[in-house]
Structure formats: C-alpha cells, structure tokens
Length: 391
View (cartoon, helix red, strand yellow):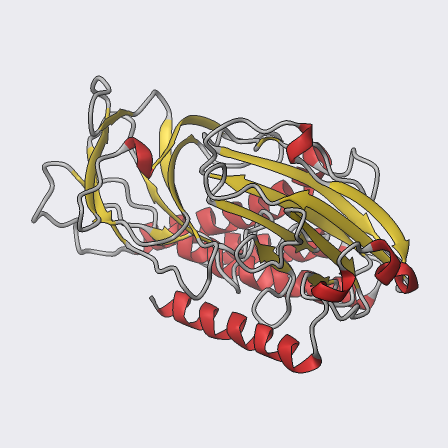
C-alpha cells in the first residue's frame, strides 16, 4: 500500500501518546489524542507544502494544529529555503505589536533545537509610510535590505504578535524565489511522489511528537514547580525576545500568584503571560482566559501586573483559568525589546490558599470583576480570534 509508511507512523504515534510519562488519567489521554489529531493534520500539510523553488508562507500552527507551547498572541508562518538561492519577501506591515523573522538551519528534533542563523524584526528593514516593505535573502553579502543565508539555511519563520487583540490588525506577506517570477513547477503528479510525501509526513509526525515531549525537560521541568525563572534570552536565537519559564502543580484549593512589572511600550511593546498543558501546547485561549497581554491585563497603581492562576474563579480581572489542569506550563514573554532585562524586571511568584487571595492582592478591590464583566471579556476574546483567523 502506498500509504503504508504513514499508517505505520500513525500506529507508532498512538503508542507515543499513550506512553507519555505525564498521562495519569482518562482526561490526559483524551487531550493527547486531540493533540495527535492536530499533529496529523499539520504533518500532512507540511509534507505537501514542502517547496523551495516556488515557496509560499504556510501557517505553522493554529488553534487545531498546536505545538511547542504556541503563543496565543502570535500568528506563525514559515517557508522553506535553499541556502544557495535568493528570495524576495514583500508585504505590508500591519499594526501588530511585533513582526519578526528568523532563518533556521534544519528543524526541531528530539535531540536538539535547530540553529538560528539569523533573526531580526521589522526595525531592521525599510518600511514605507504606507506599510509596504521588501527585503531579500540569499547567499550574497549582507547589506541594506539584504540578509545572508548561511550554509544549511532551510526555513524562514515569521511571527506576527498581537498585544491588543481587538485594536491591532495583521499585515500581508509573500515570498518568491528571485528570477522565477511567472514560472511554475511541473504540474504532473505521480504515485512515487505521493508515496514519498506520505513517508515524509509520517517521519514529521513522529519527530514532532517526540521533540515536543522532550523539549520541556530541557527548559522547564528541571526547575522547581510553581516557580518562574528570571528573564532570559529565549532559547532558539530570537533576537529581541526574553522569556521567563516555569511549570505549575496546583491543588483545587491553591492559587499561584504572579507579580511582574509592566514593562511599558518603550521597553517591550509586547509582554504576555500564558498557560500550557503537559502536552506542551497552549490551553484553550479562545473560550477561556488562559493568557493575558499587558494590553489585556489590569495594571495596578504601583505599575505591576498581578495574575492569579487557579482552577476556581477568584473574581478578579487577571485570573488565568486552569480549565481542569492540575499540572502544566507557565511562560512570560517580552518581545521587541529595546534593552536586555534583569532580575528586577522579572516575576515574583507565591502559592497561597485560594481563600487568602483577597488578603494577598494589595489592590484586590480594584482588581475585581463582576460575572457580567467576565462574560464580556470572554466574548471579546472569541470575537478577536474569529477576526484574526479570517484576516
């Protein structure tokens, strides 16, 4: 059977899900199978979208194809490259908080993070008054509007990051190989090519699952539970991003309080906190408040943001919902930074009994929201995501 390699990979993938070390309950397993479904979709799409001579941007992840603790505030795109070819990237800068580009050598594997050969944001390119931009990537010497593709360059990743979900809007983006305008790849499709793609999809699926089950061991699970690291350059070579990482382990009657200075637009146009499951993917960020940016959060009079992470509803604006998860991941990100961050810029964390939350929040009265206000917050999330996905 032509699809036999992919079928065998599916069977192996199911074993990986069922055998994941964190699976303790039927719910854990059910979430794993949902994660598997999204990974299958993504792997098939990636295998068929592999095109380096006539590339185009593909959405790397989304609400139903999650991986790698995807940021709810980010649209991810990628295109494949040849390191000896020249490419032209054009587009229109939207109004999002950040737009960044990164050239990777290879892809993520269970053994290593791919080398970042270059990374920059739109401040490194010329953007016209109407938002239009153009730059080139190739083997030539770097210069204005030209970025060198180092040996092994394989993929261009683009991140478009929202801080104000309702007020910011995405731009446009296109890539083509220089000198190939108006040409087209061969139209013929044969069974040998199809067989190869199914086999590649199977390999992508298994690598994807194994990699992102191993990834947290490198950067998260070696830290004590219910703590967050000081701000540090985000692993993977992102040029102007810092992060603070941790994992939670909370009982139903506990809450994790995270207090962090609001960095301000002059330092970090984007600052956000999110939760993730033990499958190393974001929690439901559409119908539940499992993430908040500085624009969405309520900032206290002393300039700090105070988040409450708990299963039970504390009745405050900055509640991050656990949605039934007792264990998972927490990540703070700062992007488009204008300076490096130090420990004083980072979070303070404590775990408290749920009943003591009012006494532990110094501005508790101003942090409170009514049930109607909460429903409006969720409705705004749902509407903003719907618009973003169609934009």
